[in-house]
Length: 487
Image (cartoon, rainbow, N blue to C red; front, side):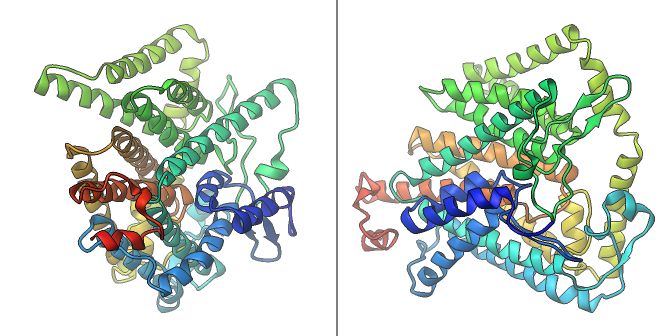
């Protein structure tokens, strides 16, 4: 399959129009990041390559950002937390790119689980010899573009109204996913054709939009705009938590967030993904623990949070008691699947990732070389000790900055709500990646990372403005440069 598919014919003109005639390109990048299975252009041959909408938009953003960087228009306050995080992220992106190009040559012949060798089940029986390939080059490019995307989000979010627009873009991307998912369910119920030529057109991905699970009861699995149900579940788990957090902490006018959190949870169940169910269960336990902790410490609890915890538990119990397919579904997803050959093959990648780490002197085999079905073992086997060290620092620093942002007595209520929602979504996505993450360059991780860091920076800058007696960011006439006139 090669050429320009239907998705390319639709999305290329829209993207170029936004690039040429508006300033909404970052928002568009956030929105199209959910089109994982789609391609703008496919290049066939022995090594299939598909240009995804997100990375095309990120490349256009890079073309705008590079001149600004070279002319000194991308700057940070001295000592601000986003500056340290961005510098370490730059080191991580640099090491990722260097490792992808150098380590496969240095450790050529090392047995690895290649993502291009037919999947996890085939790799279980036959590993491939490490060599520099198009996957390494592609992953290096993706990592650089992801870093550019984070920098872009951090920079534009402090412009008047942009943080709100970016957050809404992520929210609407989830609405789009559940709408497509609902249509996919309808198609399977009434026999309508699902437009896989649009949503599953990327030749570089193994597309699994029509899967079933279970014995006796055969359950259709939802994939929506993603290449497979597990990816859809990972997104829906993060997005439903995001919407629920906005419903709880967003103040007035949160009715639609309750609706989207409910719909997202229903669609998550429809994915029948073990990863999605595990993520949802852990996040519910975290919410229940937080509610219990607040009662013990302060003797009170936020009413909306209590309603959410009780309602989720109540709906789950009612579903299990009333629905005749509930227990067969849980058995298929949580018990039978865990004991399946597929689960054995996936978990076996953990041990082999450790072997790759050891045989590569702790440096890893290079980004994109070894496929391990957990982001921890993926980083360990591909980026080695340097990658693990950098990621540990980045996540620890990010966690501390979120805590500091939430502990500020000042600040807008909406900014605090965004911080809670994005931190919760980022945490849910991280859990999904730890449970079943086969790569570190997936757009969703870096979109959430960029939005979370942008929110932290926005709160920090607003505090700085208040200290200087400036009430509004609208005094910025030339973007970020205006901030330094007041610094």
